[in-house]
Length: 456
Image (cartoon, rainbow, N blue to C red; front, top):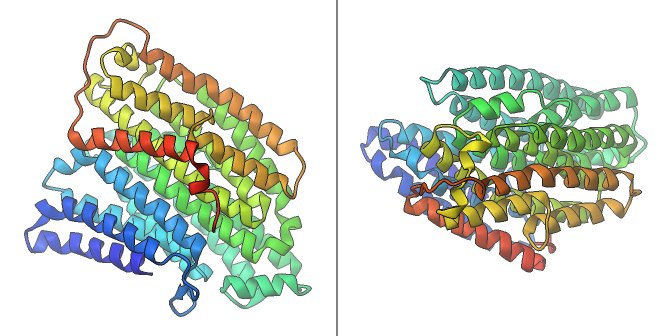
């Protein structure tokens, strides 16, 4: 609860910084405020009576874990995106939008009522629509913003209709009361199943799962690269956490209505995302399709439909977010130095940029799921939680997808050590700090996975 209030306060501070003429300090204040928020979030751990607000939100250990992942990711994102906040004209606007997007994300991981879920999604989405088009002079950025807005509004329609059908059957928006209804010989099953189907469609769009992924590559590619990084991490983490909570709490007893469909979506998402990523010539677009494939892996936690699935999901989203922040920070440096994000722009960079090369190697290996890095244990925990209640079929599909992903992740690593480029990529201090922190997090989570693999 305190995290939600603190981040909201920072957002309001960003607004008034324009009026009171201290916007040049808002970036540093935001970093300090988020670090303070992260510390206070940990102090709420293991609260015997989880904080609630009129039963609309519930800050239990699982919610606190996801909030910690979101806030830590936001800190790393702000540090890695420091150059875009050098523009003093729009620093307060950008900071405020990101902070309120984070407020929406916190609502999405802590809701206890589906109306709060909807409010969280809309707060997050509206901020991201604006940020996707924040590069006003760039036609691709404008196009990505419009596509994101139109497709997002379309998906929201499915989400609202799904909520309406569930309310029509249960006469409540409270997820615990919906759970009780589902467990006690529910009537109006046609309304329930229709609502669940519509919710699957709406939430699958938010995590860019196939076949509701078609917006993601173009939006990710056209949006400013720092915004793409935000979409790939904070937005995806919040959406999958919301998806997990709704389906494993409210609809766990009615898994017959959604398990088969979600299994096909997960399998197709993993294979298609990885296969298309193989043929990309742009590192930025490759990561967009890679992000789609990771949505398929994340769905395994929902299909597991057990407590260990939630633990695995927290670990995986943290490992994935840290590696992705590092990857986009690297691509941003190359874009600024070379003018594009094609694989050819990375040729020879590893020979004169040791930190860049090391961060690329570790982030790509982690995303590929290679031991001993965090991504390997993230997939391991997801697979084992799924196997507790299911057969091996979908895990085999996931392993095949992981094998395919090795090709395009290694392709970027190999490209960095190919060619004769002697260029040294300039990095400011905050970006160097982010790369070092991401390396340390990824290695530490891989060597000591028990630090983050249980207790929720």
